[in-house]
Image 1 (cartoon, helix red, strand yellow):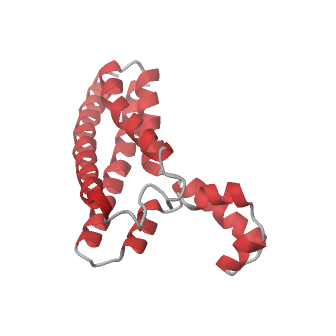
Image 2: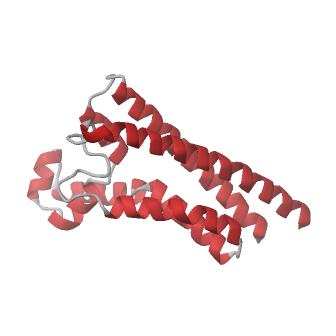
Length: 177
């Protein structure tokens, strides 16, 4: 059972590393002016801004006119995208943290807890007028681009550290089984 926990954590950590690298590349493209702020933020927020709109506005005719489809197809697309990309970093990291708590790996749980708490806090504290965690009108203000870039780099380092910890723990668990 312990090896299954670490195999899942290792796979999840690989996905989180991929997301961190994707965030770094996209933010670097914005910093170098290869893409504009709106396309950068829409890539990084990927369906974060659509999820609340789906629940707040429903799937009426206004949504279908904006996307060029029928209301039923529009609702199906939003529901599908909601389950495909609802803040994968938040969900992935929270699942690993809870798994470590349930499997009684206290050190790894306590190591993951601050990052999971930060992800939840960042998601919950999005101002009401913003499109998501990354807002195109504010990303160049007050050094937000630099702070988002620094956060992505720190998370990449953290996920790499966790990757090797999970790999070592998985090998030990497989040897002991």
